[in-house]
Length: 230
Image 1: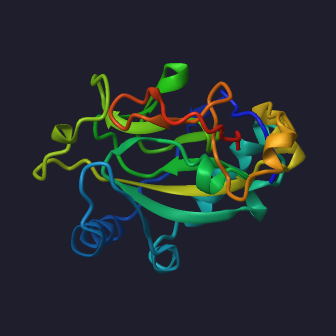
Image 2 (image 1 turned 180 degrees about the horizontal axis):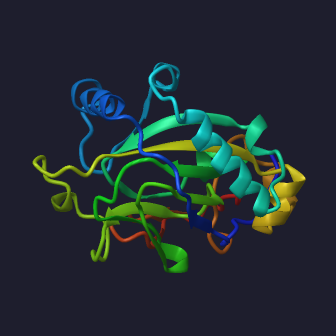
């Protein structure tokens, strides 16, 4: 286990990528409704291999992402990183540092503008989610997908009759890759003594344990047992 800080750098842009074919979007929607049964705040995976067979512009999307990440100084990291296809119906405030502490996320949103924002509560950043929105961020950075204009995550903003499901591609970029470390300004071995005592990836806030409020994104103190930063 190795300690590190959580980067507050979030890199984002909007790329000109073609809309997925209508029949593929309809396939995703059936999958979301019938297999995943997404409710407000849920984030689940969709089958990428099946989608690629019906998605002529998939390579174009990946190429656009590759070219953008190169401009960030990430070189060819994207090409060697794992990619997945995801769907969400909003997302409660959370961080992924306890499961993906060794990675940064690189996301490409494929859905049209549905009036939702990606909100990073700790740094006060809101990004409107439209087709072609791309973002790179530390998995330990708290975030949520919330209704535009709202002050937090509210399940009432995602009624059953509203079309608010989003589909996106996500890559896991190795945080210890030199180009990722440099781009996100990550520092390692910030608390090596504590890291030696831990068996699982964890997050700490100011040296003490904390949980994240899923509605507001604010850190809340828990028990005094310290947690390591991912």
